[in-house]
Image 1 (tube, rainbow, N blue to C red):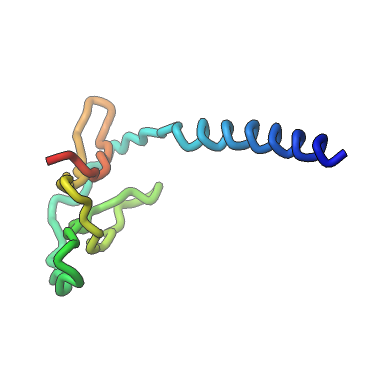
Image 2 (cartoon, one colour; image 1 turned 120 degrees about the vertical axis):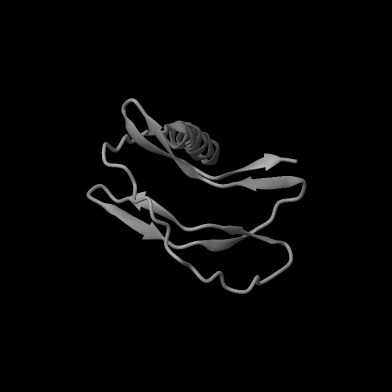
Length: 105
């Protein structure tokens, strides 16, 4: 009986685990016809909390109805990697946000 329960639990874990991985791998690209505001906000960057941090600049983000300002923040640096900032890309379909990401040095 105990083995049957463990077997069923393992099957449930595998099925739901695989579905969770598949769901998280999906990316939705949203194109916005209206351009983001050209002006950047003047922001006083807070003091660096640790030497091992990098600044992620604030940016305009689309909330489904309008652009809203997302504040910048400090992020823990990764060894042998460089932070590449996110940006708005203009395309034939509209404007799309390209997320910031880490890149090997």
